Image 1 (tube, rainbow, N blue to C red):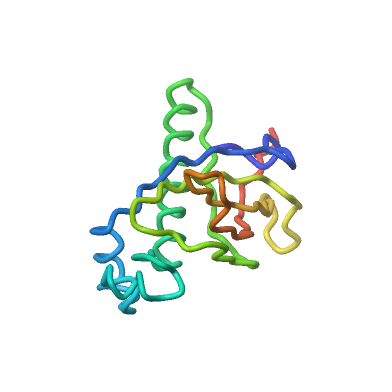
Image 2: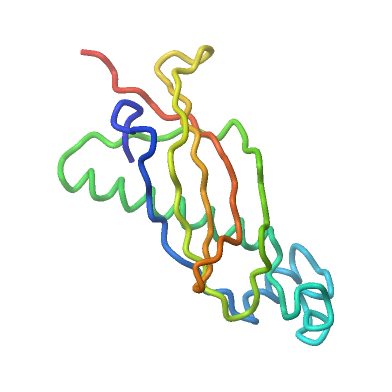
Length: 159
């Protein structure tokens, strides 16, 4: 992962994609969001969604999994080059969560994140706060998901 000083506003990260199968939709829904249109194809078809629909929380969870995996990949790459790895802190929160279009069984959602703001933390010396808008786009190029989230990012220690 990168340090605060290495990150620029407008910087984009391609996070990867996730395939929403009927099985994964039903398994997630059974455990976390057991509404009829997430659990049964016929109920989904007869709903406003028009098909078996993934829970919005499933769409967001898939995104979070890809964010973490991409961060781990970046950290491994930096370590293999002998660079110091920035260990990011927690998120102080998010806003503007939107489920724009239904994600149906068979959809493949690609996620990307763009840095929209960064500032030094007033309360935590040595840390910055990064804000990014992350989106999910289906295989037809339609945006289906977006969220604006922040994270604590370490600054390089001065020598």
